[in-house]
Amino acid sequence: MPAAFAAEPAKAEPAPQEEARAQDSRVFTVDEAALPFSSLPGSSVETDRWTGILNGAGYRIEVPKNWNGRLVMYAHGFAEADPRLVVNDPPIRRHLIERGYAWAASSFSRNNYDVRAGIEDTNALAAAFTAIAAGHGRALAAPNRTYIVGGSMGGHVAAAAVERETQETAVNKYRYHGALSLCGVVGDTELLSYFTAYQMAAQYLGGAPAAAYPVSNFAAIEGALKDRLWNVYPLQPTEAGRKLRAALVQLSGGARPIAEDSFGLEPVQDHLWEWFGSDGTAGGILNRNASDTTGLVYQLDADPSLSPEELAMNGQILRVTAAPDANRRRTDGLRWIPKVNGQFDVPVVSLHTLGDLFVPFRMQQIYRQRAIDNGSAGWLVQRSIRSPGHCDFTVAELVEAFDALVNWEQHGAKPAGDDVASPAVVAQPRYGCAFTKNEFGRDDAPEVALVRRLLPSC
Image (cartoon, rainbow, N blue to C red; front, side):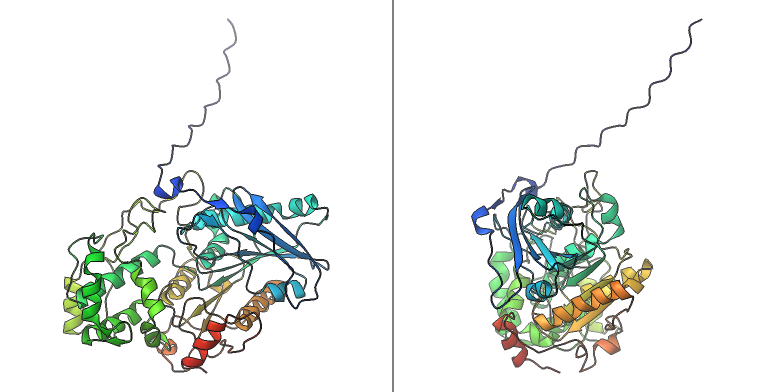
């Protein structure tokens, strides 16, 4: 009797085809002629500077002749729907090259709020660093340390890049030794819930309560709504507008210096209102609504107990529920909006301005709690900066934070930080003074110096 045939190994089922989304059909291009960049004015450091396109993303790389063996990857912020992909130099470029660091920055292959592309393209560029150098005739060893730094959306990229889920699911995997997240969306989709919560509060307090979400006719009611909330937008709120200010302060992180001042700044309000009327998909990054306000408690003051007015507001205001699978794990790599779960095992330093109402200070409180819940709090240092806008740090603040990160990772000296979670601490008049540096040099934006002089300082 013939021997039995060996059973063929079972074939793995192919991964299901992921659905398309609006972001997938958008076309973005790099102007390769715009990528080359000059030596840094006023610096005597000799560097090699290389540019090119990798996987559809433009890049810049700068390596000092006296390279110290360390590489810093820089992730830029939100570029909206611009079809042109642009590379941004790190704001601490001078500090990096004068201390021997190499740096590299990607345009990302897609604009809009595509953090997934930001991580994948930054990781791919980091992995290609030595090969690119060799292609330009400079043989370099692999970096002995690689750090990631990013601001705003790039702060989300930097924080998510060192998360366990990213390490497990990214297509382009890369292991960083530390991360510096600046004004980052470290609460990931909680930012969408925040935008929705503020819109619902504005409509409720302005006498135009929402009947459905998304609010399809928001553009038609926006003017009348602002007239009810401000005598002069956004400087002179009405009584209803003052209640909205109180609600926004609480939604954005609670009573703290600078926050009320920021409410009256036109760029701050304009950025927020640009998101009103949206559908919780981050402009087509998702296919379904990820915004959720079901568990939110609206408050009009710092007292956690609810007044009759607050009870009425919480009972009557429209609640928005997220689609349960809106930002699920994908079969083809990272989530469409990568998570910052608070699961990491390398040093992370995070900076946030107290008056930031666009990417609110509340993001840091969410990040802290997630890190505590997942046993990563010992790897996280957070610093609060007294400034009113989004990401308006001084270079001195960034340099100090970066050096603290590196010293921590290299020598184990965990740097000091701020308590971002205790309401009584955050509300102190001098909160944020410890790490605020109102020092202005040649690389600082003039508008940062101007606004620091106008608002209460340390």
